[in-house]
Image 1 (cartoon, helix red, strand yellow):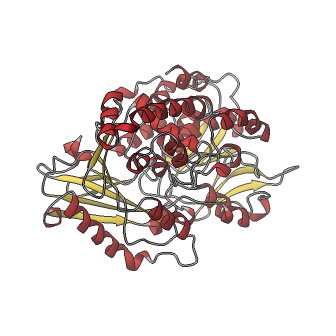
Image 2 (cartoon, rainbow, N blue to C red):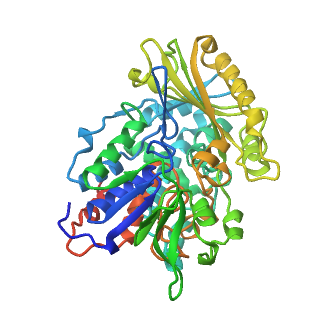
Image 3 (tube, rainbow, N blue to C red):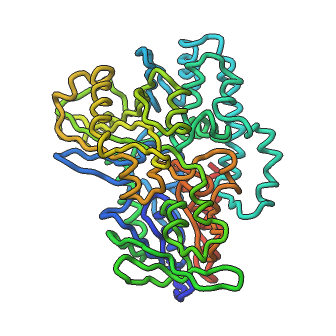
Length: 520
């Protein structure tokens, strides 16, 4: 910690304790700011909440850890080692993709094994697959290594990268790009599903998000022993050990502003109940649409008016069921993607028509495949996730009525397809819906990943990390640049770290750690 005396100009309030909020709080606290994190839930983590019941531990949200060096940086900033707090173990295969007819594709990071998986489906597409990986690497080097932690505050920032984006064919969607290299429809599905991991439709998301494929190959897919909740606990411990303050079960009702010469200026936050926390800067890890629409007074918003906020496109919603069983299913790997009978048609229903389809594709998470301590002995814990429409339609899904019915339909399917007899061994079950995201996570329209990652909502055209309406207000999390997913969200904190001025005489460690991505 710096010995520099903290003044009123060095106080920061962070709204929300998700990965983005905690990462930003650690970075700012480590270089001399006095940071207070305020979270409305009874435990930190945001979407990375933890449910516990009858000896089972369920991570509510993120389960796939990639680019682990982004966590290492946070500990290095504070003179610590991540390995002393957290144990990351590799997951292999990354995902098992199960087609509707029962065939499987083991998706992993080994080039030879992946080529063999491709060959099993379509020998003629092996060469095209290799060429696609080369293309994904090119996109990765620009989209992630060069731009993921760079602010896009001015149009000039965007204009500088347009030639590179055109050269990388960012005007194509991910599915269009994949289809230029492989022809078998099953391989097109396997190689294009990644945008769904960050809230995007592969048929609409810019091809820049093909970088996820190479990011996984370069750094692998990992799991934190003890579950994702152990990461949150370690980050909170790191933050508070540096003098940071965490206030839980307290809700920010308004970001306080003062009139400025050209635009309003942050002066703190007001909590539910009337208490105020003064601050010269506020970092919102709350949903960006919700922040503009509900936490800022209307007179302070010039660009992000109600109409602007409500006209942005938001990611799909999520239905997630958590269940523990008094049985073991060793044939079920850690991550399984169960594809339904339709691909594009189902995504059209979710993203465009915003209707709950009669079929579904699922992500089945079995963390006890890697860490048996997350369930009682002889038991397995799971969660199953289904992408569904968000609530922003004229006739949103009535989840009070549909929730249990939809869950039972999913359970019946995975009992038949993957986990025979599990319903007879069921010990505990719960589920969340887009209504949960709306009410407990203050997510506009109950979207799972905030602003949808389409081309016209990317980089400069995404809500900026530094507010365009209010001085002293900054954004981290999935709704701002570079976007959702754990690496993206951690990178939003790096962008904000670049934007907030250094304190004269304070430690500059974060500037050093910011070069880690280029050196890794």
